[in-house]
Image: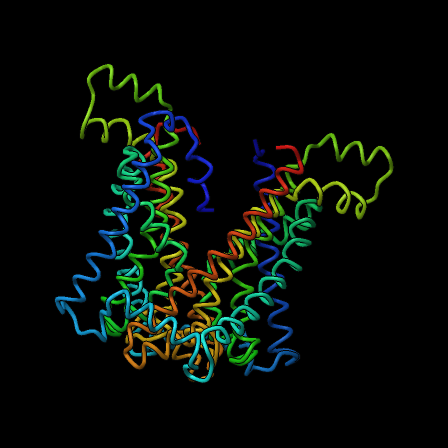
Length: 260
Length: 273
């Protein structure tokens, strides 16, 4: 629908905006000291902070180590949630009985936000990685179940009837009809849950960790080091953005029959 | 955003294999019995010390006790009240800035071009990642948590209002223009009323995220509130206090969502849909 002319215009204005904003940032901090450096860093300080964390390391690790550690935890929790949540959601969508059995328990647990599980996970598993993976698992589990459930419900009944009349049932029906039919909504759920995973991870690492992007933020907050806070926030944004892009790429492969 | 199922439950498959009311009820009760049964049994046989895994009735007792006796300075209700005040401030601030901004973005194309890329870039920063700056700028009393709640609640307000305003029937805008309406009049009298359903849908998402961000903010920086109660319960290794706090968080979150859902239903009814 959108013409290429509009796309180029958007890109040009976007780039111009970021350049202008960097200039304003420079003028407000470095040039005029309108914003004191204790509250917000100058561009030079951020560059120096970035250099420090990539070369010497900060908060017990270099940037790549923090980055990899956080990404690993998110991926572990996310993968575990998807491999349990999607089948459960599909089952709930297919079988009224499974839904009736699981739904009340689910309704009971669902209003509790994932972040509220962090203290419980710490009491049970301590401040290590296991507690974070558990909470991340939980953050991704609920949206994975809900959207897989809705995904099955959104399949045209004709498709299922046609498949059954051709004698397709059991695991084959699940693999060939239910899963592909539910995939578009399943991926919507996965995108939501990936965001929730990052939020949860950052909160978990801010509360207690020895490595990771949230730990960088925590240490920078303690040290009153605004430049490193900016570096940490940028790290969180880039890591989350990269994973969302990767998920989008998988989605396009997985539902290639759909017109985008 | 995760509201899809409720709307889709009445979808095409619903005619298939419909269960009778008694059977539904029975299965639901069976699910709950299994859940609480496994929990009670695990606690009763001492799978873990009671400090780590209290039976359900101990949690209920603790919940009742917290409403009477103060824990870390306040009773459960007082903690909830101070949390709710922060929530209300952050959420209202997000609505007061987000909705007008969304309308303006939906109407002025140049503003859309300038602000949208910034907005998209900032959206990748998880709200919780604002905690260090929130504490640095506004301290840990009210201001810090409110900023975190604001960053959680703000994006859905803007996005939904923007979508509503952007996809208003063009005929309405043209008609208003022909009748000589200015920018201000078109925004307030055409775009705003037409985007109300989309805005209210955004408010629900936004309130959910705000409540969740509040809990996160209070876990990290606060000296009162429900999240603080959780942290202190965790520090004294009392699972029953932590669980009581979680139940309270769930109940309030559920109530907030229920209220906004009723508001949404009422607006849809008024519009004859």
